[in-house]
Image (cartoon, rainbow, N blue to C red):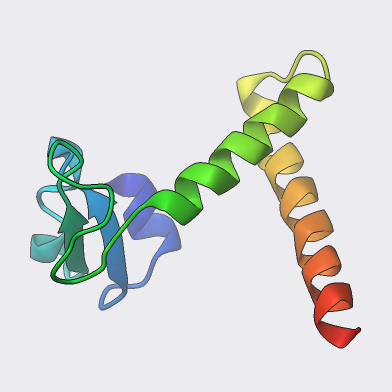
Length: 96
């Protein structure tokens, strides 16, 4: 919870799986919607899924691996760099 509390404002809607670590999000002021991965990858009622963040993290870690050795302390820097490149590519694609 400390990382979520530090970077995400209370009242934000968080889509997650049903991992127990996320169980107390509502008690901290977040709106939590879930998908049970043992039953579905997309909640058939609410359409909640975690596919986007899982795909983004997979792409990000693949980029890290191409950078050779990335230490835990370097992850924020590499993550920022990855996101900036992706955002710039998205803006250029949108403008075309």
